[in-house]
Image (cartoon, rainbow, N blue to C red):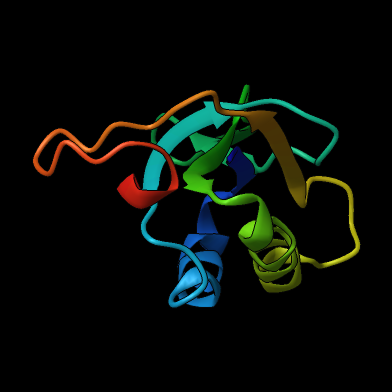
Length: 113
């Protein structure tokens, strides 16, 4: 099993989650702020009389646990949905998962997904 964490631009969450529907058992999304290689937006200051570069970009994380057989489908769905070809599209992090336990059903491993 693998944990897939995608850190993407916040405005691309709907695209990515729509693409994941039916390919994974479920996922969570988290909103946050981050700084990477993408350009930071210009924001207005105070009463709109000045502007400055934002310190951080608005980003979102999508996290899902998938069986090894679903891994490529999940990666392709996310990357295809958010790709623009410019710096700041995001990253997908894949890590191994030793076990998963569904609290309600008590199922373990791939059956818990």
